[in-house]
Length: 98
Image 1 (cartoon, rainbow, N blue to C red):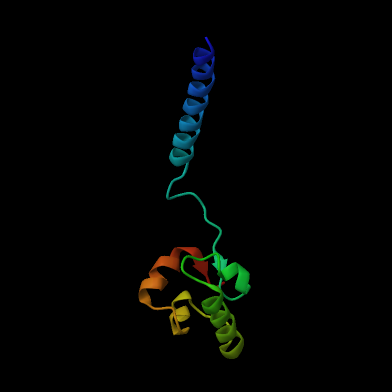
Image 2 (image 1 turned 90 degrees about the vertical axis):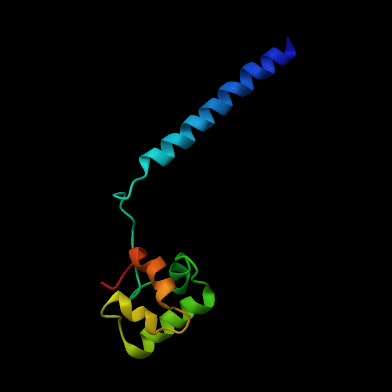
């Protein structure tokens, strides 16, 4: 009897969790708006939210911006040491220079 009660309690929980996981995946699409990070205004902490951007590279972005002025287009971020074309392509959809 005890085993039946446990199975009767655990199984619905597992099903509910699986259902919620599937629904979360299905609700996301390429059209889901993503709040882009403005590389002309973002703090070091905000820049670190970008993939593969750690504290050192984030600080370099801020330093570059302070020394050279605002980025006029996002491609200019590749002038920052540590950001090459591969990294730029990963962060490109997540940044703006507005």
